[in-house]
Image (tube, rainbow, N blue to C red; front, side):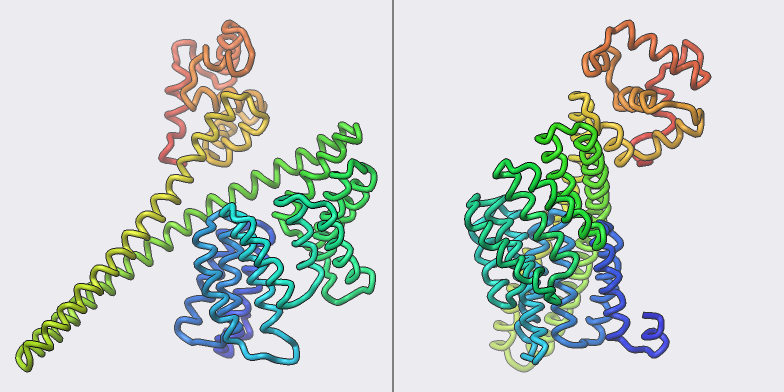
Length: 434
């Protein structure tokens, strides 16, 4: 990309941003991926490159928004990707078909998010029809395993996908192999063939780690955890449960950051539309003023057209505001999730708390680096405003044990017995600092 920048070659710069964006969203770093896509989109707005590039940009946007569970936004960009994809001219390398295969496949997964399973299946078949390949067959198989259970249909499509692997087809990439073996693992787990399931899922993990698609690895770890649970191997079961929880929490944290960026982008678009609206009003007012001197009839039609433009612009702004409120509510939900995890004494409570309020543990460890994980959990519960009675109830302790624990904590933090722990912790870090 640096070479392209030196040569002032827009297409090279755009594809550099796209390649980086691709890596970021595979690693589950959605905020960084969106930054690269925004940069690529701005360049193409100034210098239209070609339909293939535009289709790829919007296709990648739809993938990232799907991973962030912003399905409406994903479908919006997927529509744009299809629009430009269909405008690509046919060529011997079948670039048009390959790209539409990718875009239709992603549209299917966006429909899963919208709970529209039938529509998702339609686009999976449409994807495979556009460009037959192992990933397309594997995705259809997973549909019959996860969404509309049909073991026979799942197996038939897995076998079709495996044909590409056995003949070493160029489309049988590490990602494709990981997906196919994951499908077989899921299939044999449903058949209660635990050893077969373990064998295929371990293969899936092997190829998945080479590609490092975080979303796929989360699924593999979850299935391996279930498999080793059925095999009665608690150590392996625990290992993959921890990997699953860690990667899932990491993915959700990245989703939150990506959502914040998405809110900012929507607000920027809203402000841009307001400026456009003002310019439109000024333009039409000038035209009306000029034409009023020439022809009153023309003024009437221009004024009518102006009102229609204003109404449509207001509707767009209103829609953007609703989308912004919806996204902001998801961030608020993160705090509610923490409260529920605390009340259920969930093992993932501390990890989620540190993800949403990272500065709390940081400040405490600065005061005393020897604070244990149990100490940090206890501090988190107090910081959230839970009383001693609440903490005793959530952690299954006696009320006296909670008081003893508070006394020990004061010693570790060099606090006198007259210091209120809740006010002390809140004074270190409040909600607004997070």
